[in-house]
Length: 121
Image (cartoon, rainbow, N blue to C red; front, side, top):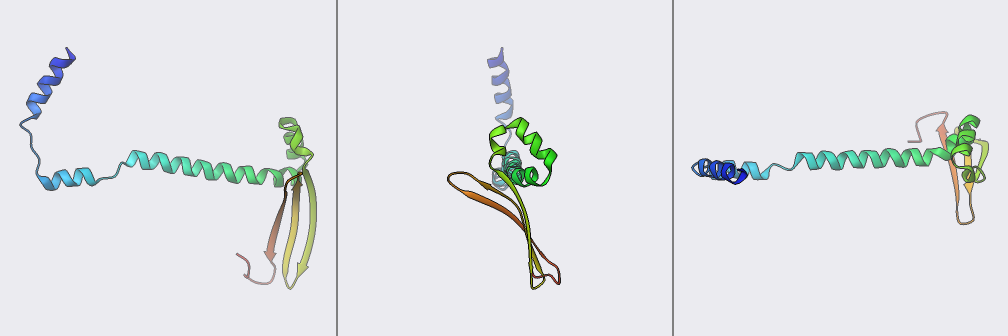
């Protein structure tokens, strides 16, 4: 049955021709669905990375978030240490929000703010 339908379609379409210019236009159009899928995964990866990097700061800054993290993954709370030191010099304020330390590496989250102008991006 399917072979008969395929043969009938092939027979009817065998007489249809297109010019070379139209054929090149059709072949030169990029695959839009593949590009959308790739863009979606890139955006999701970037959002996941931002969320992953902000978790220690959130846990150190907001005690309720820290307690939530302790419920979800207890071993991470032993590494989080709220620091909250502030230093100001020449109109630039630097605040150390949190630090995370394990045996191999130390990660420090800080913020910088220009109080007098627009010197920091």
